[in-house]
Length: 282
Length: 266
Image (cartoon, rainbow over all chains, first blue to last red; front, side, top):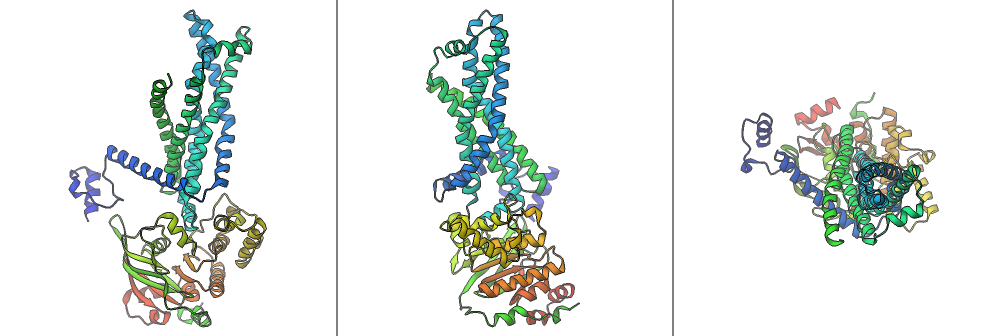
């Protein structure tokens, strides 16, 4: 009864856990947040490898991929557009106040344009999609897991990594940059409208001043970095969903953890990606 | 109310006219062991089923009956022992390699496990859509209708799984399990949670399908009446071991205390 002894020790913290006495069984993991985090990361890596292998070998699940492109892309568009537009308004108001205060009002269009396309549009899109799509994928797959539907797919000789995970992750990767462009567009449009409501400013003026000095390096790298956000959102949501245990409570936990973890990793990835973009696309 | 002794052994009698069973086991389980944590669920059990035969696996709850089926279909990995399907050891097979073997298997889950976002028709069409892509839409529809007619559910094509009863869900699950014309049928508690009439209907249906398709079948059940109706022989599990394996006469004449106790309460 080694496991029982260990469980009791872990519960009461009376006996120290020694590595040599830890059970080999994978169902009993060493306690401690660092070990759990490393174990989670290891499992995530194995999951990613399984999905990658499934994704690059036939048969390809194009039908499901197109369904996911619609589910993740088209159906997120209104929310992303609204979030982008709201961000454009807020940014415009805040930038006007700050720049006027420091006597740099002429830079207002450029400040809005660069803020939106460099950072605000991509990160807002990433976070909105991680909320909507992350929760959706996490809850859907978790529900399928606890009701044995994923087992049924596997028992039907269909690879669930290919059908469920690869299609969703690929759809996230493909759709995030497009949704980012939509968020950028709405943000800039509402940024201009907000300015134009305060003082006369034509769209032509706003664009010509705002994009003065801008080039493709200002637009493309920040837009395409959201493909990485898509990878993170899709991968974490599928992983959390497909490893769920424990009925309705497990489904709830999977949905919550999908959103929390994907949002967190999107922000952390953004830190690295911004640094890389500055480094490679100065 | 019939006692278990009074139930005619329909399967064994009717199976006498079945096609050649062949001498090679379609499913051969050898020394299968499985633990979850410190709980030993299967303790090196061995079983075999030939073409046209039906084995009922009986036992108390938590004795590893469903785990046995999940190992045979590759949803769980055994700690020890082997599972041979048509002589091929499934241990260590990749998911896609295992898929080739799974195409020969039909699996009915305990709670049917129908895809809740798909209609009954789409559920049954699912394996066909993925493995018989050469079928036209009309051919696939005809095949689905035929399968649903076999299980008496042809009127429920457009219904969602949530709109039909548990017994109906099991019928649809059975139709889905038969979609690829498997030569192995695995049934996990096909009559659990059903009223006696629905249970009897499922039993009759399974028996009819066995006779028509001559599959090698394993039925996991608590229901001794059901087992006697549809199975040729039984294996009784207790604490991870096979207590007795044989036909119903051997089961009823067995002197082992656990067997007598089980039959008494069945």
